[in-house]
Image (cartoon, rainbow, N blue to C red; front, side):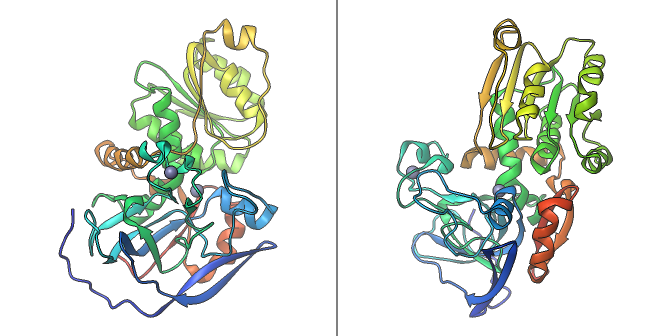
Length: 364
Ligand SMILES: [Zn+2]
Ligand SMILES: [Zn+2]
């Protein structure tokens, strides 16, 4: 893996980084560029996504993290969806070196607990667990200091924007679809067509789902989804009962996934699952309430709850996307540079049709 490609540009002493002081604002500060310590890489950020969880914090005074006392955001450089190129490696780095392209998994777990050993740093509750952009400096900056063990290879066929999307949303969607074993013997229903739902539709195609259908409340988002060529059809929730019934001849969908995180969205995913169907919940927040007998038991449903993904699955996904000929960046509707952070966050919080990302002009 390690290459000897020479470092082409000298690393400056300071860099811009975006902070989230709250009250719906962002703040750009000039901060020192860190030097990598043992087992650490300095990664020049090529692209970094803005995530629903970032928006929650700056606009809705959210939130805490599992296993962490008090507010999750500790006044660090924001951004947990970076992808870039290694420009310096600290002592002891064994897999990646200068010039390697990487995707950064968004949490540095302790590396020793059972969840970490499964690659699910997301589920680590050790005191040393740190999320990029929340408890340690993240990717909305020119450089990010990453633990080598949190990095996976970004294939040459994919762009940094592709990598940034795999870092969170696409990984989350992939894991949810793996749990329910999507394949070509059944149709897939995706509820909620925000960036994660679009990812689920695209990956569902890659995994070979017979047909892929989306449900989305927002007409603007439905229109954007229709323009991407991912879905056989998309419908509004009000029309779901009639349209989805017609689409499957009343049989329902072998595979359904909720990315809306809403109670009605989850109900749609469950109610439109076929007999012996498999249902996946990946959308955060809120509640789920359902009639049990006819809706769940009598249909012999399997219901999965899935949270983010593992390091290895993220790596597998990157390789699979290349083989499937799919590019995550297709779901990006808006690109910004760091000096446009206010505008980028505001758009991501409400007005955007698809995914909003920061891109660096310094990397090809
Ligand atoms: Zn995210
Ligand atoms: Zn751990």
